Amino acid sequence: MGGAGWATASSFSGFLYNISPKINFAISSVSALCMFAVLLTLKVDHFGQEENNVLSKDKIVITDVLHLLANRKFWMFALYIAGVAWMMFIAEQQFSRYFVTFFATKEEGNAMFGYMSTAQSAAEFFGMMLVPAIINRIGAKQGCCSPGW
Image (cartoon, rainbow, N blue to C red; front, side):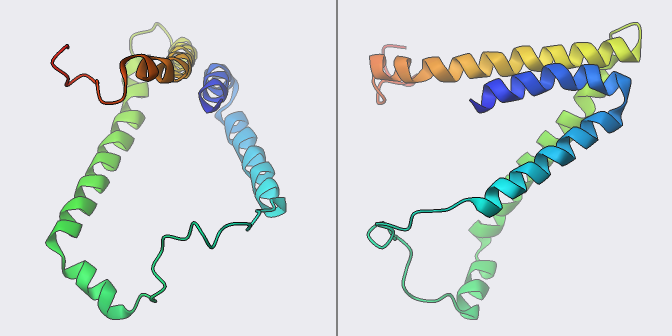
């Protein structure tokens, strides 16, 4: 359902941005406060938690942290994850500015970007609904790398 919510939010955000960017900020802030209130009142059932505990009973000590920080593979993995995230953030920030240049006015470009984001999110939503059926039909082990593809 997150994809459907994102598609709905995308369709309205481009339109509201043209009226005033402060409207999107206000709606986001109120939504965050509502979510915070929900999280504060959330009750979690602890039944059966002991049986599913896969964490070690040993406490983490400073030498464990130092060994991790001395591990070259850890730093390569951390740089890879950070690099991917940085590149995605930059691309997401810059693409909307580039996309808007294809339209006569900035306002029309902003609205169209919202509509495009809606279409993209809706396609993801419907795709996520279809993928389990496809996997059940072909089997998890028969993915794109099987000889039949």
